[in-house]
Image 1 (spheres, rainbow, N blue to C red):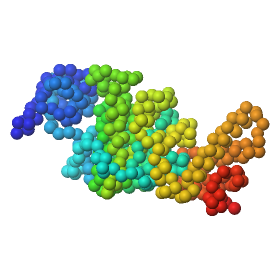
Image 2: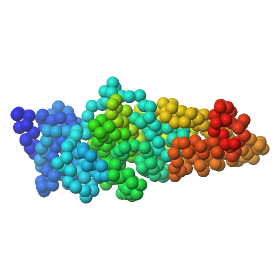
Image 3: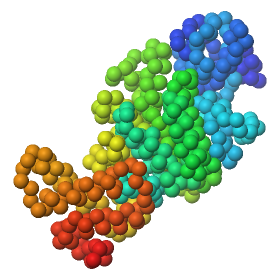
Image 4: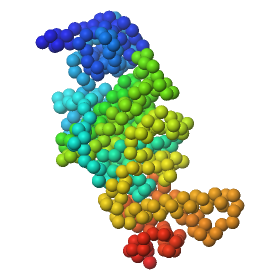
Amino acid sequence: MAGDLEQLVRYTRIQEIVGDVIRLQASGVDLGGMAEVENTDGERSLARVIGLDHKLASLQVFACGKGLSTNATVQFLGRPLDVVFSPNILGRIFRGSGEALDSGPDLSAEPHINVVGPTVNPVMRVMPTKMIETRVPMIDLFNCLVESQKIPIFSVAGEPHSELLARIGFQADADVLVFGGLGLIFDDYHFFRSSFEEHGVFGRTVMFVNQASDPLVERLLVPDMALAVAEKFAVEENKRVLVLLTDMTAYADAMKEIGVAQERIPAVRGYMGDLYTQLAKRYEKACDFKGAGSVTILTVTTMPGDDVTHPVPDNTGYITEGQFYLHGGIIDPFGSLSRLKQHVVGKATREDHSQIMNTMIRLYSEAVESQRKQAMAFELSAFDSKLLKFGKLFRERFMDIRVSMGVIEALDLCWKTLAECFDSEELLMKQNLIDKYFPK
């Protein structure tokens, strides 16, 4: 009863306002708890406790601190942030505050779940053994996406990472798609929404969107909301869920800005010292649940200045199981890596997958060397000419991110491409596979 009465108290003395962060003396407050802030003009906004220093509580105001008076009142709600969850959220779009962004039916009477929950018990994790077919050859053939994997797309500004992420979303073999947009401009938000609608997957998609003009705190909540919903679909509905998040660098920048407002001591390049921990807490939600479904996480991480040593991609690389490196409009076969592909190559796919994967990359690497020799006017051998032809076909048929084909179709096209460029004895592959698959 005392705790309930404590929550009814309205605090009327805000000591400090720094950007979107307010500070006031309060007792009985929990970290991550929600509050309602009412300005002197009657305007109300939700806020979230982001820091506690003895009795001094720091709150991030959802509607930003601009125009907020120190005479505003604050009432703590005695609950953490929650989000609506039921099958009725499929095909719906939500803000980072959890409010519906579309004009669909009211969902306030639907069940709600806490956004921040415990990590998965390791005993309930299953070893990844299932492949998620994306119909993108450079992924399915050379760096398979595996159920329960956490993997980023490393990119830079100007690269078509939104197009690639959307394509994977509507082509991937998954039951439910959960999309989280972080600091999106309206054009990008509209692109993702229209892409999912046009390709018929919007009915099994949930979107959580924070646009660039929305409050910063909502940007930090989008991944937690998306992952909480994804985990619930996987555990309670036995669904294979694919989570798409873009852009995690915008998420890290939001953490940095709030850290500065809290007067925390920054670490490398202004980012907070817990950057790794905060990223890992989200990525580790990827899981293949024992006796239930799975959560697979695919994100975009933009690298400022194409610098892979930047704190965000650098920390991400230690957490995730590889990366898809988008460079020059293509998924770079040399910079990309999937550390879980050995769990599915030749097991969940055809017996020739491993040999084809290694042979195609080896020959393409040699084709790149032949291109350099040609550019420097060296004399080319007959085999160099074959390699140049192969390199051209490889780029056209497999490397373009707009190419769409199933993994079996792609394997057959690999054999066809090899037959068009080389004799069978030049491939250095297992003879039994050549006898079975090499076109006569």
